[in-house]
Length: 105
Image (tube, rainbow, N blue to C red; front, side, top):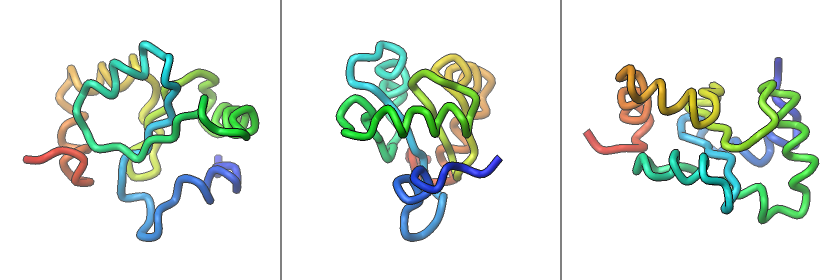
């Protein structure tokens, strides 16, 4: 399913989806866990956005996940905290983050 046009405008940097996007909320403990991984993210703090309801609805429609965090690498939805932590535990996350320059080798 293609992302909502408003999400594309917000998320897509000039050079494409070759980065890590992290949709977060400042008060969310699960979001804090993902932030503690130490990667460089393009962060959208949903609780600081005037149109957070619209963005959150679009995220839910796009990903099937209605709660934060939402992590994307190179435009692919990785998931929320549990999925990101499981990917890290399985050794799959670091190569993805390294590939996009979100962590140093």
